Length: 321
Image (cartoon, rainbow, N blue to C red; front, side, top):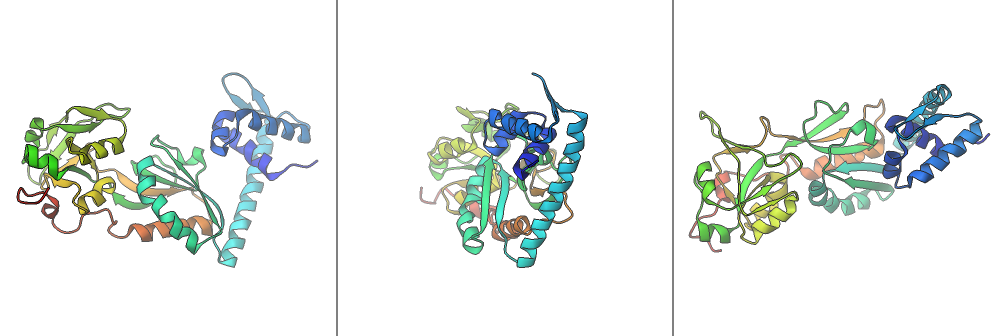
């Protein structure tokens, strides 16, 4: 009998996810390939491991026993490998990262060249999606999340609180004027994000005052944030975006900050930006190295935060367009 490690890992993944399709997507394989490998494993072991039907895949009693054994073996193997790398002091191997699309484009991908120059034996698999990801089911080594963390079931390294900002191009403000209060936004063309939850209410608050609640509107809605940012850069209107997305555009004066005295939010609490990683007794040297690398490169406070008084980043009518 010869059972290879890859077959064991795929079988454990099928038990955790409950179907071949999710495992296939994660492993960049076809569902038929996953099914074939599991069938070969059953043939090697001489036992049926799974009940298969159109609705779900369920482990047989023998399959559950093998699943427990495989998990223990793979866990011990992984821990041994991690300790060996740690003793050798050289991060290496594959680190799987999951991140929101735009955050990955702006704050992960630009640093990878420097990461590899420092640790050339590291390999990165970067999966970018704006869907909610379960850090336990996805099996990522490191997951960047922007949002609530209470249900994550994983360790979290907090990076920042995501802060919403209102901004427009100097050209737009020169033509249409500067909104001085939240209510005056009703007289402007707002470029609005419309995701799966539809249009969201926006809360504008200042210390000692009752928050004003509004639903922004204008000539453009989109489920793609970068589309709205590009439209704003063209002078089309006003956007509301997180600081980590438009901070650099404000620093370079391509966009100007609006309503600097107000806190803007669509949630009761600003969403957290965090790095999640699984509970484990020994965090691998490679994953720890990647976490520390990005924490260092993001900076404290993070480099996307606007320094000084926010009013410095507003546009004045006497400034050049």
